[in-house]
Length: 244
Image (spheres, rainbow, N blue to C red):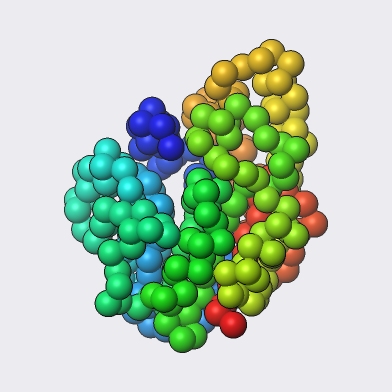
């Protein structure tokens, strides 16, 4: 991502409705994975650290982040409580002698040119009964200024993410779209950005408090469905993978 994107993330991910809502949805899924007590957890592309506290509810947490500014912001916001190492996936993963019960790619895979290689590489550090949890942006037709600004390589369909996981050597335990209730709003925002030829996506900044809370509650409500079943559409995709 661009340096500005990391700074914006650090400023907004604690309160912005999207980051909060995604954490709630992901937490609801992780709660049902029957992870071992004190699980060993690794987040690939940990950014500025907004997910680390949530992941710490499930065990000891490490992170991999290639950007020095992001790592510094993580240390500042978390009091340097987490083991966040410099590196990038799949070419520079400094965890060769360690294994993890849970490895997470939260809106990270779309940033990696070799997404199949990244998933395949992490099989080497996955415990025998371990899980990979992936979230990615959905639908290439939703591509817009937001994707360009964040240096995305692609957005995913169910079929595309399934093919990527299969080629990398994983079985799909479950897959679902999410952020479905706000999909019409996302479509409208993308259309406006295209018509007005915006260089930056609308809605990146945290909205006014009342609107931010409303959007958060709508998004977060999906945790009740996603934790137990699947949604047929949405702005994002979530998959739980196990090694073949």
